[in-house]
Length: 320
Figure 1 (tube, rainbow, N blue to C red):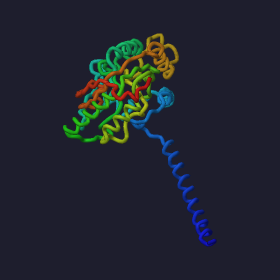
Figure 2 (cartoon, rainbow, N blue to C red):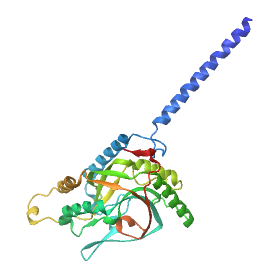
Figure 3 (cartoon, rainbow, N blue to C red):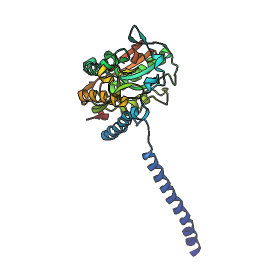
Figure 4 (tube, rainbow, N blue to C red):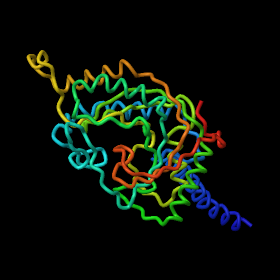
């Protein structure tokens, strides 16, 4: 009877080793999956509000350093953040900056949060007050009727996704369902930055409502055919106020002094921040936009918009 006991004891040892190894492997795999960074958080996850806010703060600080690190590339006819040449986008007609509208083929299909003129106009007035005296004739101001925050593209110029009319309508319906689920946002202007490409940007934080990272995750889930590579960081919440296209026009007194170019730009941005940093706004609409011209939303081009109010029916993801 001793032989069977020895046999089972010997058989049990490798089994225990195998089971222990399997458990350790499972735990290691689970840990790796939990710690893996996903550019688009799951629409069913509930990340920390503070985590998104901290990510945005780090991103905005990096954007604020861009001008210092790369210099004013826009003075040399640089490119936009979407790799488009400034000379392809604007021209001067009778002393007026005029966009050069070019057909987008195929049209870009963008999803944007909308900022109403109620909030856009006070911002634009401050920006014009500070920048227009120096950049009259070499500045383009964003139209206050279409201030927006780019969220997610069903198709963009870098990765066009062809779609039939019925497929586009299916995308529209999917975006409508997302809008019904997400909550209106209350936001605060964290800081204004000037990029090396000459874009004056408002960078915002979220006080309440569905976070932009969660909105993008829901749109990713709703639009599976969309380009894998999107144009912006998932946590980013920004809108363009203006674009500088040339050198500042200095007064006769200012020309008598040594000119610190970077210092001048930093000073003007600081003046804007002093006036509107901390400005609060409300966002209650998500738009599905077909841009028939390149950068139609930025350049007052041809577009077709579908507007959806944020319904907050899925308020499990609401931030407070």
